[in-house]
Image 1: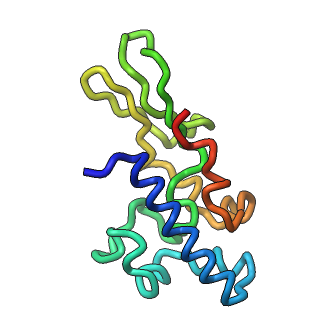
Image 2: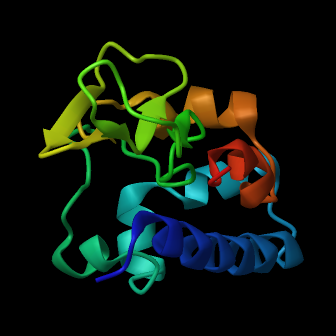
Length: 142
């Protein structure tokens, strides 16, 4: 099974290749953002995400955009333990009210499944960069 860090690195490469293809086709910023709409990606880029094969969305929202499918507010951490002695693996840098914490044994992880923040086109436009990894750079393990 692939770890989140491994997925992140692999996805970054796929994202950069696709974005470069769109830049080579001379799409504008707005056109690139529109291209990443879920329905378009399912049709034109079915290998980009394993959920596309079953037309399943990772988040239940009408206008899901996949440009920032790994949230730039998600942080990996290798911090010591919290007050209860559990190791914290990840957290939300903006403490989204729609985020949650998943605890398992002595481990704490950020659960982003209820948060829709990075999947709105207005948010993507505000943080847009054709080099996806630059948007995500602070997400990498420290």
